[in-house]
Length: 529
Image (tube, rainbow, N blue to C red; front, side):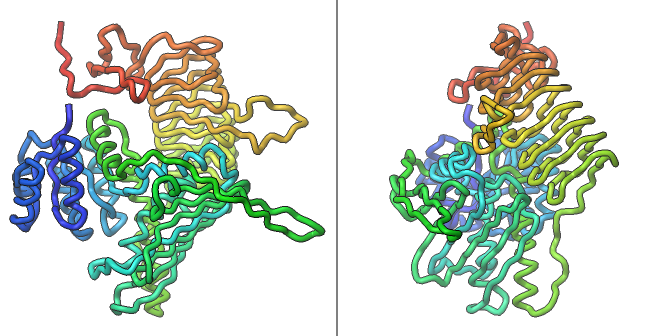
């Protein structure tokens, strides 16, 4: 069943959202303060017009897509959430980090999807680039930079930093997999004494990765290019190129001869990408999340991380341009987490609020742990490991480099994650680490072993002592050595019978062939027998 979505705002970008929602069969109404604009768009796409108040009161409308001026995003999104609607809102989520967090908390409290339009995270070329990075095709990340330049579109309600840079900041945070530990910015004003026209933002990440974003609307030609530099190869994403040439891989190398570095240039290798419209992919993802309850790729917390960078950059920019220290910009509050005195946390590690690190544990450099997690005694994390929110890692578990836990993952006592397929004590295989991802809500039982290079699907259940040697579908129940699937489990961890109904919650499930696992089916009514 397709959700019914009202699009609020039919201007420069809103009209594109109206078009795509119509193509996806989800357009329920068009809202715009200019009634002629709303009527024209509604007529073009076989829909109707409505006021915002009518949309909020209409129980037949499941969600709203907001494409208003940035200053209205917070108030419009909060009103929609108060009315119980799922919300897609264009970037930025809000103009202040504290306001954005209120929206995230509201959405989580009422159980509604909140997704932010960081469009390029849905661009097929960027997704292919991220695969190259995640699969180790570039080696260890060293440096990332982007140019987003054009002559116009010049705005007066926001500066170039807030208008152009969010796209690139979002992509960089996704590629690096953590938040920066330091943000600085420089820039200049030429057309208006309060609005920056050119800025460069610098970011430093734990583990030594650095990045910068150069944006300008006073540039003689259009350029939209992202460059990623690893220690084994380099790659570019140039959105101005035709589809066959949007991604280029460069296997440059530096060799040392007689104590001097010599650059050996490689010819570009063009990485093919299947063409598709990013906005179509983005809004399709939103509808999928509304239907299944899946967390969006660019959810509210991802938007908060982007806002944090923007606010820190704005703080430095104002200090430079105004010649005085401004009032402190809102920032991420000091983390409220606990580390036992016998545990050790390296410098630069990011740990979220309400997380507990217990006896004799060690969190190594470059690692990032979300909020609300618990790590039992004698656990080890890192280096360069990412753990999501609300994870539970029991005693005697080591998460080596290459392991990634999404939100709500449970790891039982003494469960094992490997990172090399054929280890030898005398052979250095650090360059051969394989990525192992445990998706949201999955359970890894006590003494189970996850062989590296495999993916554990969302809400899968790995029984105690099982040895996983291949990818596991979402919600699969796996037992034995090697692990084999013997059934399915629900979000609540209950084994599903032939009727595919969770005995604890009453939720019904169905097989999603595209995902290769189960999805919850809220639109299917469970009928008592």
